[in-house]
Image (cartoon, rainbow, N blue to C red; front, side, top):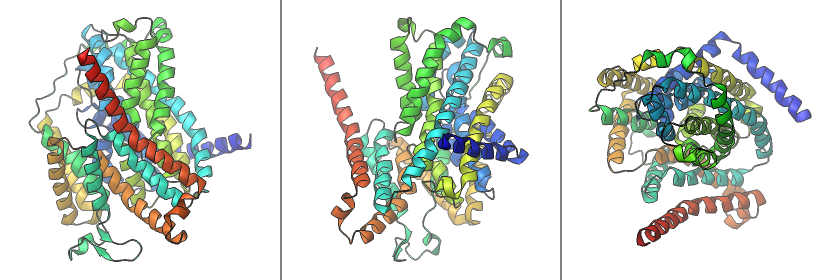
Length: 508
């Protein structure tokens, strides 16, 4: 009871912070911008957060992280707009939404599909936030007992999520991670102060910030790839976008609620595991809904529960993914890696001490998630027609605005053209990586975690008298390292199993 009363007491502090009109405005702006960015094919949460990072310069940490998190869960919903209306998912997590959402739109039920997407996202987001509210401080309190060796093991656990971001090629993901680790050691040694790979350039003494890398490989690279894209034109019957057509009827609610709930809990649980995230959650939730629905054979032809389940999963995964990042300092996805880097840029270190050292930031963020979900569902009902009009803007015009924002943000980071040059360099690197099928997310993740991993390892070895076995003698460290080994080998073993299964299917 003491723990529950403490949680509610802290939540009241969070809502008091959210009563500030300025912070409320930042939350609103984040959700609106996130929904718009999420709807644009190829952008999505991680890219949106990276592009809009410069907007948080000069903000206090609470306002900044509330706005960036608003972009995060706003983008998760935004991806469903084009997925349903034109069969083009804004992000990988919205791919499953196209399977039944677009067929619904083609038969004149696009408004209902968009409405179910919004309401299932709202329900899942709210339940996910409630679970986040009770779990996060508990995990943070337990993690306060962690020493340098435990933090090193946790950083390794975060790095193993590279396997979950690998896509088709695990080796290419590890190559990207190695590139990120190399970039993380550029600059002055954190302990001895020795110069590393600076080549006499004073601009490199403080290392390479993750912001030029993130804006380059996520933002400018996408602009380069979409510069020749065809113009998107969305032609939708205005009647389907009226508010009354967005609300599912009682029968549809009865059909969808079990799938919304299963998708919510599945998404939250998978979101907490580094490397899984919203994409895996949405696919598994869709598959589960298809298996358990009484009309599973009709999935893919426009079943409304085929929209509800994946949308619930990918939105609750947002709450789940924030738990390891905020309480343990372990980002499990590209978006949370960028968020973690943003917090560190604001001199707030995510981890067990966040809830004790910066309670206003932690609890203000949780309160903003409740309010952000309300803003999102109202936005979906009222402004859907406006979103459709915005999405009809010519790509060249939109790209020019985004490019200007990126370059201005890169310059204002250190008031130096050097960071602009770095951003351009990383955009070219990201372009070739994209062409070669090398994922960028592992590189960003490795850059964010690289310095923390190195400093934790070296401090742990100093404490253990340079004896690695002494580190392993700590029970929590040993348990986490076992998880590291299991996660590191789970992806290649899974691929091996699937390859054998496919070969057997071909032979049979």
